[in-house]
Image 1 (cartoon, rainbow, N blue to C red):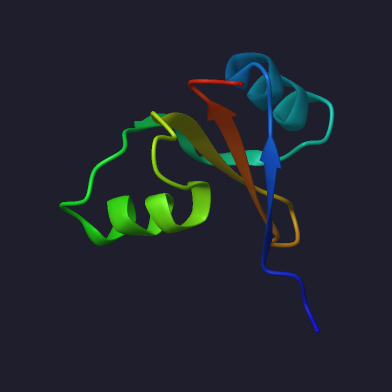
Image 2: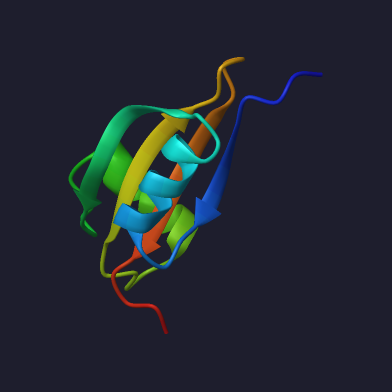
Length: 80
């Protein structure tokens, strides 16, 4: 079985992207992108299902390893 991707919660998106790209050599597929809580799209409904009601939004970035493993970085807006 081959791993497809992993998700990692980070405290500071900019520092995390810098670390994973410079120290580990990952490449950015999608840079820092804001996601807000909403029900109008399939992605919005999926995020509510994953993070629960009231998650208030998050930032996400997608990176990839040299052998094709995806790394999703998440930075929650409300870190409580």
